[in-house]
Each structure stands twice: as C-alpha cells, then as structure tokens.
Image 1 (spheres, rainbow, N blue to C red):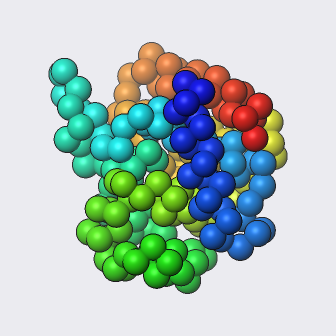
Image 2 (tube, rainbow, N blue to C red):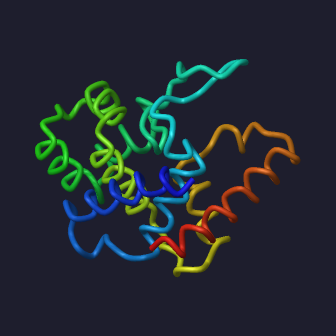
Length: 175
C-alpha cells in the first residue's frame, strides 16, 4: 500500500499547488488520500465491476468520478468551485465539458486530485479537523455519495465504514 499511497500523495501535493493556498491543509490532504484509497486503492483508474472484476465501470480516476457526478459536472457548475475548476481545465488543456473532463481525469492524476479537492470545497460545511475520522466519513458520504454504501446491506455499510476509518488513520500519518 505504501507505493499506492505515494502515488496519491504526489498527485494531491501537485494539485494543491495549483489551487489557492487556503485549500491546502493537512486535513484536506488526509481526506483526499483516504477517499482515493477507499475508491481505488490508488491502483484502478477505471471502476472495477463484474465477477471477475473488470475496469469497465462508469467511474474514472483514482477518486472514481462519473460523468454527471459531483467531481465532474458538480464542480464545473457549483458557484463556489466553477471559477477555480475553469482555471484547472485551462492549465491542463482540457475542454470544460463533462465528457472531456471525465476522459482526462482517467489519466491526469493531478487534475483529478484538484477536482476532488474542489468537490470537498463545494460542501457547505467546513472540513473536519485533522483526526476527526467520523467527520471525514460524513463528508465523504455527503460529497461522493458512494453507491456501494447507499445500496449496500448493513454489513456492507459497516465494512465500508471500517475500511474508511482505518485508511483515514493511516493517512493522517502520511501527511
């Protein structure tokens, strides 16, 4: 996991350097890394679906964004993030359309990390304090709205929650 986490740390650091400095904090870094681990383990740039799992799902990037979802359409249109997102699209040479953004983030980890941070920024509540694992979990549920959790059984939900909390604790040490 340390190699995968190093990949995520590099992308997050580069992305935060392209955004206003007030968006960078240890809390933001820890949450972004945790979400990347939760969604893809920083191994899969395309959502794994089926049995056996294949990279053919509707979500791309280490943060697993769908075309019409918050990290693509939501960030592009939200009043708090639209201008900052437009700057990232221009910097990375990406047309500001859902399809172009979704396609680009499958391979552009820095752009994906920047958009993931802007999705967190679009949430009306402040980032949880570093160490507030439950607050980080609630932010993740609000902003990512993970289908595996919302459609999952109570056992699946408990497993996903436990995985997130454990990842968050390890990510705190990484930031």
